[in-house]
Image (cartoon, rainbow, N blue to C red; front, top):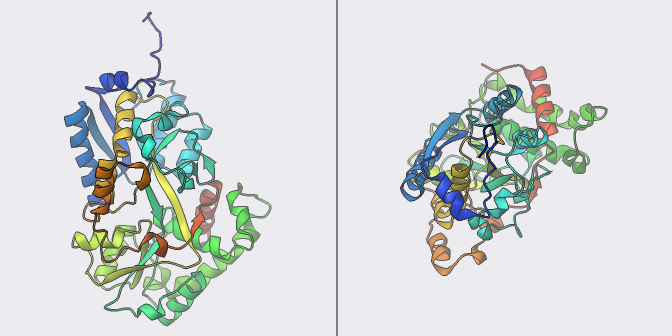
Length: 393
């Protein structure tokens, strides 16, 4: 290489060369660090990567993915186009849209060139190629599936009286004041609740898959905020404070402080039961007309220092072994992105042997998937929520 030349980006089509280049690299994976079982899974992945491929995985624990995006933005502004501090990001939605728009992501198409891509279920999981309405174009690799599901303790709560949609949730809250709440936006779960309610109440849901129109924003979101105005006085602590995040809600369900909580993982309740965080009387339910659904991914910044190691990490995360372990409730319970009919007999048997737990709904019990709104809606919704309700205690 001549002096001052820029090294060519690694090409996953030449996988043997990728493996050789990855050996000895350290991959700084910026990923949410707010869950002990997820952190433990990432630690396991790191041990496997080191043993098999000589890749050192460092989990940079985030409370907000936007912080990792901001690092890459700052490095680009400073002209640091090589040797960046972020090698891999756990990402989707508005953060992916922002990085794609600003040209902050590694080469298009790399994800679909990974060796384990051949197992990915692109036929039945459309959100693998469209992230919150934004075409993925191989700029991020799928890692897991998510769908909004509600949980309750059948030892305390009558299943026959459970809500079946947003409006009946409001009626349930009237009959059971103080027994429901949601985390304060911009917490991911709290913001997802806003999007779920808006998706149910909006007059024309198709407007949500388009960018926000300033001229019609207020009229479009009016039903959501009218709903929240009515709900908040009925919530835990009369809406004057909010649970910090999903783990806090989970503890409140376990302690009997709330009766209905929700998460973006259909196996979350069974996983929490398996780990002793919730009683074995907890069960799941969903809304028959549908709840939000999406895919979460890993992406590589354009200036990552260890691109080969990041590619090896992304490929390992969609291996049948890693995906099956992730789906086990006692480990995490995160649904797979793989298609069972693309796997060999041994790998199909690995998934078939999983006990998904007493609280996990079967796929045909989860109800329809509601598309995530276009990423531009999130910032506007969170800003309007803050303007109206301020910051809780």
